[in-house]
Amino acid sequence: MTAISVDADNPSIIAALGRRVLSGGQISRDEALRLFQLETSADILDLLSWSNRIREKFKGNKIHLCSIVNAKAGACSENCSFCAQSSHYQTGSPKYGFVDPEPVADAAAEADKNHVTAVGLVAAWKGLNEGPLLDEVCDRIKELKSGGKTRPDASLGIIKKQAVANRLKEAGLECYGHNLESSRRFFPQTCSTHTYDERLETIGYLKKSGIKICSGGIIGMGESREDRCDLAFELKAIGANVVPVNILNPIPGTPFAKNEPLPVLEILKTIACFRFILPRQEIMIAGGRTVNLRDAQSMVFMAGASALMVGNYLTTLNQSVEKDLQMLKDLGLDPNWDSHDFSDQEEKACGCDQEICQTETVPE
Ligand code: SF4
Image (cartoon, rainbow, N blue to C red; front, top):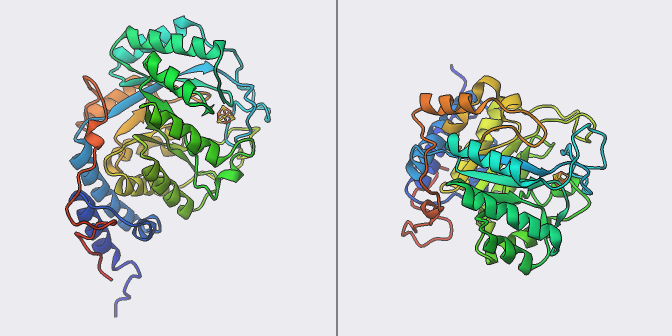
């Protein structure tokens, strides 16, 4: 007699949840957790075939590309355990003050040439207050805005006042990067110099000023699958427009230096689960892609990614932009956007009138 696999129900559960999301419905935390717990490669690849359909339905074949300029490097007061730029660890990462106009202009020109949708100014410091530095930041944003069709973005840490967010908006900032990093439960293991609530407060000020939100996290820090699931639901609750998924690249000298890398299928499954939970958002594969996924990088789109950080990361290298553009072309994906205003993310109710859509029920 043939043994029945304990996973025998999985294909029908995955298909039911996939059909529900495709028809405009949502999945609950418990249902999502069931997907995060899938173990076999057969089940995970089955999940990917559905996350690919969901990406195609809600994002078409467009891929949003982002690049970043390190606008102020190293010597950061914060102690984020994954970060090469924290002054709490000896990492050999470069250190310099706030950037002059030229490198920003060069990054914008390079981005225009490579069909990159957005260029983000990223600064290694705790946060941004009113004062001369904010004036300088606003000048760089204005220069980026007037320089070409690439969208000016920024990631400048914690904001404590509505006036700061308003100034950034007035300067032309369209989207702000501020990761939640992980679940509220796991966050204290990543950083103790600021809190999860300070990050949420910052996002609140930015949203109020009309700036779009780029917020995601890092996987592979030692968090559980439940933590990853809860992060995705937190990002849904805050209405993140772009969701960067970083995969830990352990940096010598940091507390996470000896973390075991996540298996490739676990990474792809996590991206797929994010796509089920966040069907309309830009799910962007950011830091750690090349080192963790190697030859499987192109599978991130099948897993549901619709955005890619290209060019080098803040302190580590990426594969060349030319190679990334070739990868997209080979997959029939298109990085060309005339403008990207996130209007494709507006929720349209499926009509079932339930908080969690029940248009497709899951087999018991
Ligand atoms: S992640 Fe940002 S806030 Fe944390 S240490 Fe690095 S640069 Fe500082």
